[in-house]
Length: 79
Image (cartoon, rainbow, N blue to C red; front, side, top):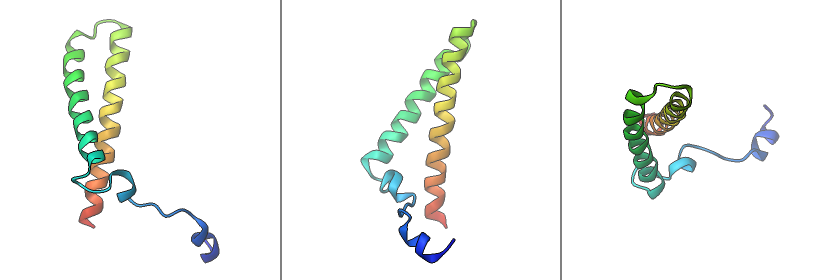
């Protein structure tokens, strides 16, 4: 990548995602993750048909995405 192209690209880092470990956005994401885990825990034992399984899988996807985002954000502080 040429330096002129690199200078035109938007700056982004993990602070753009949440701001800090004490920011409202970070805390909200953690609360959303906790809520989805609780919902998922209630859905899985009762997932007996395709609709309820699909709903459980949607929450599972959200849990994975949020977890991955939060872990990546925390790892950025360790580098």
